[in-house]
Structures are given as C-alpha cells and as structure tokens.
Length: 117
Image (cartoon, rainbow, N blue to C red):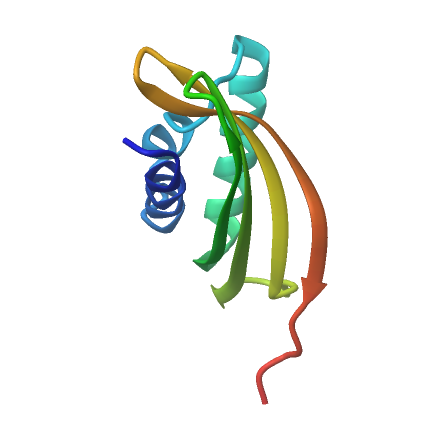
C-alpha cells in the first residue's frame, strides 16, 4: 500500500463507521488506541459525515518515514449541529514491515464552510 492509499482506507473506515479499518491506519500504543477508539465511537454515533480528500501532497519520503499534507473536506449528512469544514493536516507516517501507518498528525489549517442554502 502506498502512503496515499492509507488515507483512502481511513476515509472508507470513517464512512463505513468501521473502527477496525480506521484504527488499522494508525500506529498507536494501548492508551492512544483506547482514546482513538472512544473518539471514533463518539463521532460515528452522533453523526453521519462525508469525508473527501481534496488534496494530497507528499512532502518527504525516505521509505522508512514520510511526511504528507492532506486537505480533507468534512460535511454533515445527519446529526446535531456540526461545522462543515476543510482541514489541512500534516501527518508523519512510518513504514512498518512494508505497511504505512500514521504515527503523528497535526492540524495546520481549519476553514469553516458556509452553510448550504
């Protein structure tokens, strides 16, 4: 799997509300894994969201680690009030036994989309 496919797998896990698929994209320790699972469960129980990868930029890659920037649009389909938005996040990836995993993520931009008329 290349690093871009990792994010498509993550989006599919989010859309399908499949915690196993979503969590399989992350390299987490046991505490982080519990926190990520709780966050995933909370969001997916409250909302039906649509996720679209708008832009993917590979910033660096040495075959062991990589840094990418992902611009993603998140829009509410159903649920309580929610800020539709576009976020730009930098991710550090690690290639573990031929499989890319997200090691660390940092949101660098968050733009609220205007409500649909």
